[in-house]
Image (cartoon, rainbow, N blue to C red; front, top):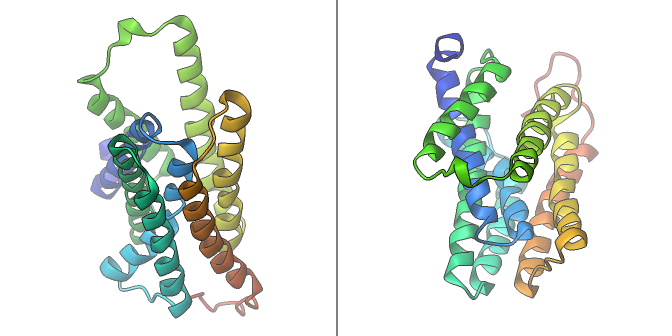
Length: 231
């Protein structure tokens, strides 16, 4: 797989593996709402990475949205009372950063085969987790849930999103992706009764407002004439 993807593909796979590992560890240490909302910072972090490493232009309103989102993250971190929750929030931020890194690699090397990179990411994630794993403790029900999570939520979700993102404008894809941050905590609340705290709700509302406003402004822009590339 590494030979097929090349070293840019290995770098992308490492980012995906780090993102998925941090995601699982974050879920065990903080609320689902915090994990999903902080993870929504990924597009802004990717924009910052494109500016730093690819010299891509970042619009003024994007900088403003980044600042507002950073404020929302600070509210969430400041309001958490337990150290374990702060660790989980930082791991969620690691998820967003790693996924943003993979996005920057995609923009840098468009030819990287996504299915091969995703498969390599799964292998790297398994190698990383093997040192702490205890496979013998997993029941048949645990294995079924893990298979559903890995194949359905992570695998199929990633492939569907990457396939769909190629067919619609980036702003629409980002706006649709925000639904995960809204629906995820709702499903968890209905299924297991986990309710986000007041600071999580406040900080999450600030972050989501920044992301929605930024994406809505992109949607409101007139389409570029044929042959003109969007900035």
